Amino acid sequence: MRLTVIAAALSFMATSPTLASNPEAEHPPISAEGQAEVGRLTEPFFRSVQAGDATKAYADLFKGTLLESKTVEVAQLATQTNFILQTYGAATSWELASSECVTDYICKLVYVVRMEKGPVAFWLYAYRRPTGVWQPTYVLMGDSPQFFFE
Image 1 (tube, rainbow, N blue to C red):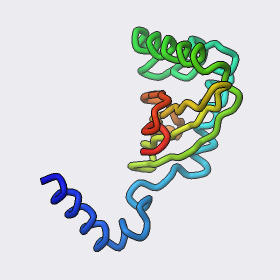
Image 2 (cartoon, rainbow, N blue to C red):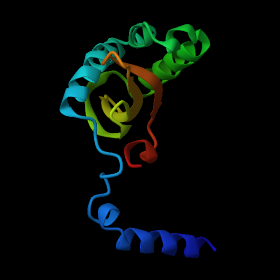
Image 3 (cartoon, helix red, strand yellow):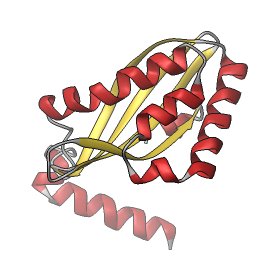
């Protein structure tokens, strides 16, 4: 049964010119303008992570959003990030590795953070408000290969 489903999916992709020729066509990357706007959120965030202050990183990232009021969840993210810092050492650099947008106002951005002892991925889901301002809606981090290669 599983092989049938996989074969059917591969058959569909092979016959679909849009998906076969350009797999990103369905979910294009964030625009250069959007990337720059989101960068105004992520640069201070990663600088605080680099400084070892995960609590400040998340407080600043979520300021003015609905996530700001979710104090338990934000505290858990800070705890997880502190564990990553203890395990992998300090963050030395970060870069946007990939992005995909389901609309021009909802995007997933994957950042690879180079740590002293290995890489860590941060997934940031972002929403562009009707006012044009981008805000984070969800953050996920990890070191497993699926975090880097989806």
